[in-house]
Length: 80
Image (cartoon, rainbow, N blue to C red; front, side, top):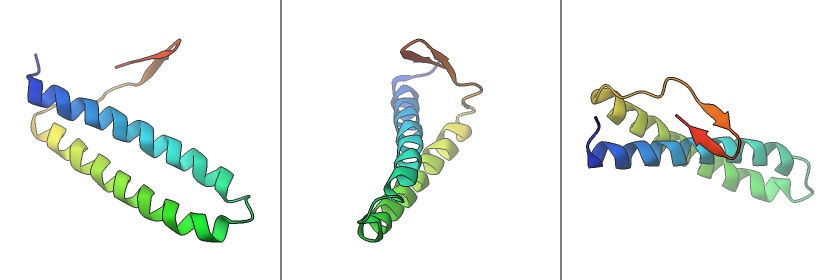
């Protein structure tokens, strides 16, 4: 069983994972826009920051021997 602190870290990990996936999808869409030269550097910096936080959380969870084994989409809800 995981304690409250580990549960908070796991929740942040899931949120960061979803944010990275969303930003990666948005990056492809923004590349086609006329203002992409302005928006892409901002998106790059944001993606690097979120990815860095994601990997830091992954390391913290690994120290507690917690890892996400499988993502499975079940209708509208994400099941771990």
